[in-house]
Length: 243
Image (cartoon, rainbow, N blue to C red; front, side, top):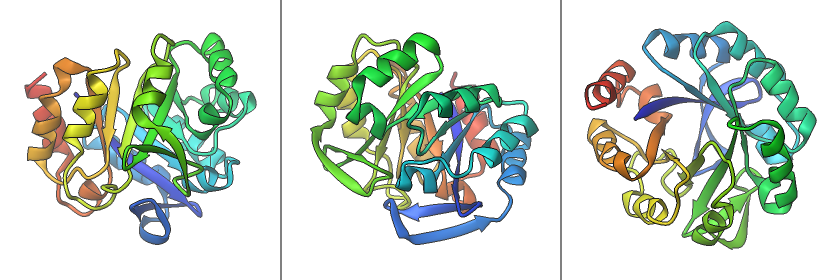
């Protein structure tokens, strides 16, 4: 299983939100590039970067910072947040980003996803941001009536690199991942999943690793590593030892 340290960028700074609320922000660094370099030095195999301002407004705001990160490190990164056009995707991949994450745009325009998959095979992921079983959109600021299971079923058979499942109610809470929800989704799809939200300690990582045979490929960790609840080196080593 791959550990993905999260770098969420708001106003050019590395932050974490509390349950996706833009008015409850904790700032950790004013230099996203140095944070990326730090996580790489501590053994990260991938990074997960989100343009929070882009996610909220629907227009990428920190493309330049993200490209700087991609060019400063040697490990791959996946990027989401406000990516709504072919030009957005092209500029990120051309700038060194390994995988682009689409969210709201997929809900609004399924044809767009199909077209982008035809161009960038293996480089497109889809975010599955959920609250109480329903998919959220526009940087978690809006709920939809779309059930997560229905959304996942509708994507089956497409050449999507992975789904990134976030339980919004757990994000930034350090209350543990949504194991039950993950099991349910893994049981209905062959698309690999990455888990996000609530991871607080190594025991949580062990719980997630048990889902590896069912298709869980990784876990995104944010607040826990920024606040010292999890040592990134220990987490990476644990996943390496267990395969």
